[in-house]
Length: 298
Image (cartoon, rainbow, N blue to C red; front, side):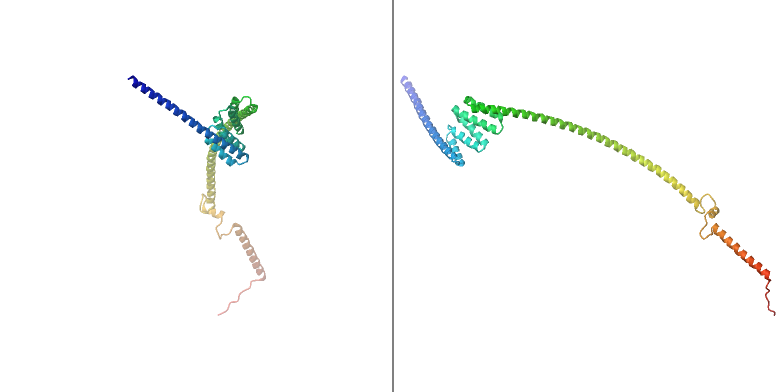
């Protein structure tokens, strides 16, 4: 029984030792592969640096990307690609690569450079608060860098100016909104007064219309009254109508083809003159003697 247990123990120990040995071999193989990939990545980075110095940005960008994809231990590749983007003023791409380099870097000097350049990108985009934090992170990895310290002071100053300007703008905006609200209230009040005046004018117009209707009624009554008077007068002037006898009307206004009093007077005077002439003629004949007419005998 004891011999059997001893054999099992030895077998287990053998398996453990074998697994450990295999693990070590595997780790060594993996380390070997990583080192190989890192060397390839560094070679690609060197080629990209050379191409970039020859102003061949397209080929340099391609090799930097290959270097980054080949090994995640080569922080130089994304850092240099970030610098290339920064020179091209492609700041968003530059920030991505600087951030990637800061995360990949294990050396404080490399981390310092990555965060310093991240701060520079934020300064370009006027994100001063983020720039301050980036420069602080850079100084944590290299407190003695005076350039980073200067950039941090500048970023703080620009941040203060930006905050003061924002406060001023907010204050002006609040003031403008308050004035707009005040103007709106005044306009609404003015509109209310205008509506009230319009209602009063409409009421006055309505009353005026009623007054005009009353005046028109009075005028109509006056015209009717006057018309009745004119009609009455016309009735008096018409023969055979009115209160007076028709005879009087005939004397006052002669009928057609009837002599007027003046004409009758003139006619009488003419007749009298004619009679007078006849009388004078007769008297003259009497004075000469009467002429006798001879009659014939049978």
